[in-house]
Length: 454
Ligand code: TYD
Ligand code: MG
Image (cartoon, rainbow, N blue to C red; front, side, top):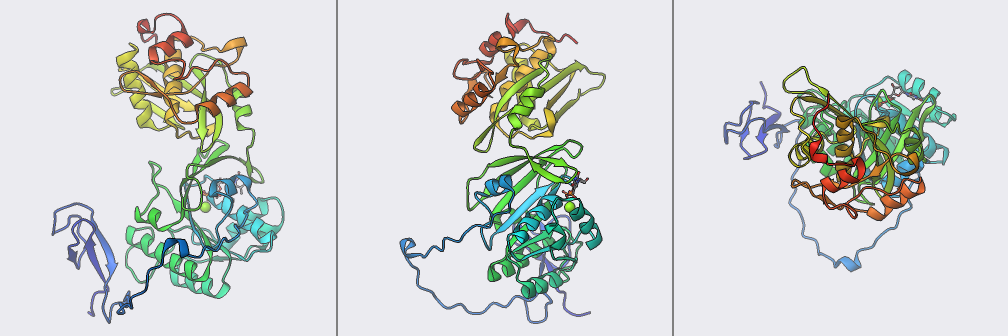
């Protein structure tokens, strides 16, 4: 046997051990050992460490800025989320659940870039070239069929192709399915993902290739793979929604070249993804106004968006009762239910609670608390929440743990959006200091008497 080519290093204490173990022999922490290539003359993953020469620092004001033109993807919402298009040479990670439309979105972007005369490359380590072609055939326009593709899972083959083809924009689909032969371990393991992303970044930065890196997410929605992946890239975009529904939100979680938290809404149609520019109008138009329904004035990035939040409460047959949440953060919903129990007399300890943002959009906004509280209270009371003139009731606001309503960012823009659709007055923190006061306005009567009606 020759020298081992990899070693396992503890990410907590730095302890090194030749063999992998669940628990670090050095510090006793679990799951901290990460496989690394051995540094040294005969290791397969040898990294040369030359003696560095000193360089002279320069004042920031003297640093030259090359104001490179951004590359438009031809998809307005994607450009907007990126802060105005793709920065040449940048690394963009797009995470999302299987089937959400990552491959479709990136294929459409490449097709538009190609049609605009850019050099592109699509690297698929997930699907065969024939499968990619079938997708491209569904998309409108014929540019998608002209995209150069390779279906390869070997990292070194991909790197060599990048060096040779020198595309301006390249899609890697996905970072979890490429495999480096320098490391043992299956594709998608922490060490593999880090190696793949690191090597691609090295070539991309050296050659000025902008890379759209597709990434998988785990069951709870976090990007699969090492956290360091998010630090390495320039932008992290999350593509969210439910596979069975048509609406999807694309959100910037990190952006070195533009505002983070910018978001856009898409709809999956037969011929690809379509931007939804009148999302508020659609959701308000479809709002049911039945008990358990309320309109939330949410913010998707810098833009206001009106969505319908629905709740259903019924007696539970199981212990603990169900809490089924879609489109919202389940921890925030749990908090709202706790506040309802303590400060509004609505105990839900033996009730199943379902909360849903209609249409499959995802709202990531603390201002959604009041909407959840009102929808649940309305469902419990079986009373409609109705705004003026028979319109649906609109609201927003964050709930504090003591039952107070807290103001949230961009209150004026939220109000203006509601006004645009005739939803006034809006129940919100400026006009109501506490949850109780908001309840009195929306439900009438004494909210303390609300008991579980189911
Ligand atoms: P896909 O882009 O393959 O998702 P991901 O790469 O995130 O796994 O697309 C997912 C779904 O979208 C798939 O079930 C088929 C559907 N689809 C359409 O409805 N219309 C279309 O035009 C295309 C290309 C796909
Ligand atoms: Mg895909």
